[in-house]
Amino acid sequence: MDSTNKLSSIIGDRIISANSSLKNFSIRLEKTGVCLDAVDGPGISVRLVGIEDLGSEKEAVCAVDWSWILQSTIKNVSVQGAAVKLELDPAGPVVIAASNWQGSPFLSFQPYKAPAR
Image 1 (tube, rainbow, N blue to C red):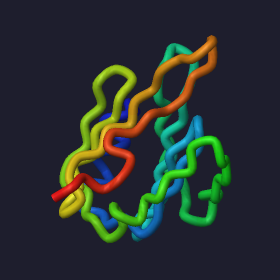
Image 2 (image 1 turned 45 degrees about the vertical axis):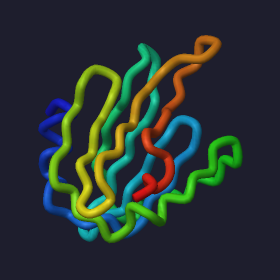
Image 3 (image 1 turned 90 degrees about the vertical axis):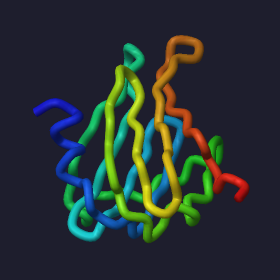
Image 4 (image 1 turned 180 degrees about the horizontal axis):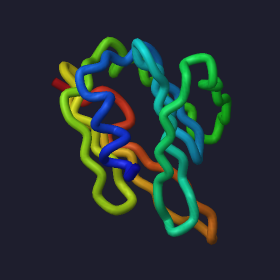
């Protein structure tokens, strides 16, 4: 199953918690967990996991406060190359993209904090 098909199953779900590290973005939804991992290429590997299998990554290099997306509903998901775009209501769009730095893949986030309103 490709990444788009995997992620289409989470449309309509609400975000309970989220955390990120240099190479991972994990979201706990009401019934499942989603892990987006930076991989060589660069690319993003998508995994749907049980809630109990979600770790709580604590990599201080890119600690992000994701509280602003909590309780948002996933309205749409699109995958284009090495980027995943989540349309969240009410938080708005979030793009998770993979890049390489010195030969090692990493994730970037746009926006990484709540947009000014």
